[in-house]
Image (cartoon, rainbow, N blue to C red):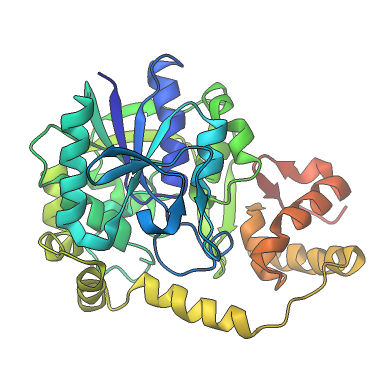
Length: 365
């Protein structure tokens, strides 16, 4: 018997799940983490989530669930952070394949529960948009969370819904969530982040990066994503709360709409109807735009001059921190240049590296 954690939105939720598991239970018998392979276009230039047919080297756990080991590889041109996570963390990363809709994910989860006989099952969402209704104007990426919630509610097993870092994904502010969050389960500390410290040096997740940063004491306003959304870094940032699964399903119109879906096209159609958009459509449009844009050279002098201008404008907006993803996109660089940009900035101004965030100085150096 082991523990099972379902990373509601994939990406950084899987990293946060590993940190929570280590914080609550230590290093012995690490949990199995069930997660999407869905990375932003900075990592995976192919829009939408990856499925089992997008990888080589998977390990079959049940008839419809495979694990992603360190040796697995995404099939080009797709990309994925999961093999590297499997190489650096002691957890088993099982793959959510959403291409058969909520009913398919429910079947995968039921098989995994039967196979593992877990002593506990947690559904973890960083930020809390799993508690959204679906019509909030600040929402950007509800599809994965809603689909996972719909699947978990169909499984005949006790599942605890947890929200880490309420408001940190820049979609629903913490004030919006305060009335629906339940008991405090844990408050992350700087020591808790040690279990994922190596991952934070390269993983592009902004929400989990801010979760770790607030656990390490960062406070202020962090600008994130391509749109430059402001996120408050407060004492609530490193907290983990329980929430009621039935109430979440009752609130989440998209989760209720997709509960009987059998393929991803149906899920997208419901998202367009309920939310007014599909985030996969957004990725398709952005990928097409990026493919037509000529790549820019990363010239250190030019980049540092652009950074000075960016920081001056950010300070005028009251921004204290930002992410390397946001800087990469704000300077019109591509995802493949993010690592080189990060190294350039840290080597040039090491005092501004507030790991894993970039600190905007209060006045020019």
